[in-house]
Length: 168
Image (tube, rainbow, N blue to C red):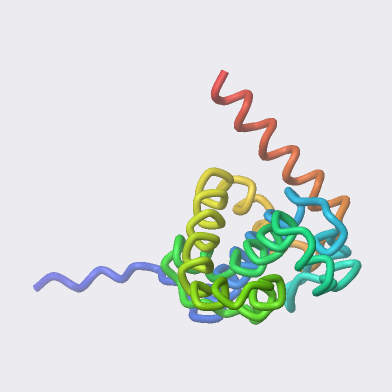
């Protein structure tokens, strides 16, 4: 009679920490790639992403590309969860509220869900292309517990440099 083979599995807390770090790293990466005022990182830790300033609703109404970037960053954690097959665990900025603040025309509010779907797809495609950067940030986050903006920038640059040297 053969004994069943046991495979080492991660405990739920380790899996949760891994999923949470991926989701926070995804938000931090997208925020880092759009260095506008409401997206400038102060730091990212296992409790969330801390920005230097909050988005101004008036600025979001006046600048549609800025509003779209802010909303895509707010959607990043959920999209990272979808890409990694984990449940969404982080509660950051409310993407729906941010987008509704930015829309001025009542007809646009009728298409809010469709607009969010488009921005969700754009955020997911950016994360898919930069998944190695997200993984490097997540590993740093798990190792150190907190990364400031300079450390995020350094890790992203290292991941991009490694990818460039491997592709050439």
